[in-house]
Image (cartoon, rainbow, N blue to C red; front, side, top):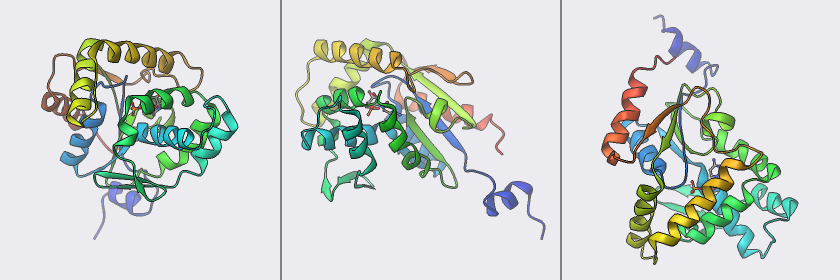
Length: 234
Ligand code: C5P
């Protein structure tokens, strides 16, 4: 039997698995969209922000100064993390809820500009690229981590819509949340993520932008799947 080229090269390990990169600002819906797209395709998912949040949590717990680049990078290198369905373990303890706190998100964005921290997390992220495919969400999935991703989506939404979503999410998880202060924190975090020298939050030149301000989750998921169905891969 002759196998098609795609299967042959895949089977021989030459062809890297396809990646759909979904980047965008905080609370643009990337995480939910990435998980649903991955579920629909039967692919795995990488929530790269979780790695920055886990590093931030480890840094906070160890009492390390977030500006101490080498100490923070050391924490990133040594992260003892296990991702299970619906649970994230740090050094064996379930920290799924802890890493979702706003204080940790903000600390993550303070340590994310450090180049050695990003370098320490790079290969961990690339290790998620397995067949049949990966949906990866973050800030630099399409620009740095998977620059050859066959589909790159830049997901945006206006700050009001994003703050309302984040407020709802936090309240559902039992945290207190205030819309005005969330909007202010989001502006500061986005500005820090956009203006940093290393891997800033910018669309890759070949990314397609989806504005989800007025779209529901299902519509956004369908929009991404529609773009993927028009891609010829491999
Ligand atoms: O996406 P999430 O809000 O969980 O990310 C937390 C922070 O981690 C972001 O504000 C950003 O500073 C950083 N991050 C990053 N690169 C990524 C993912 C997250 O710099 N790929």
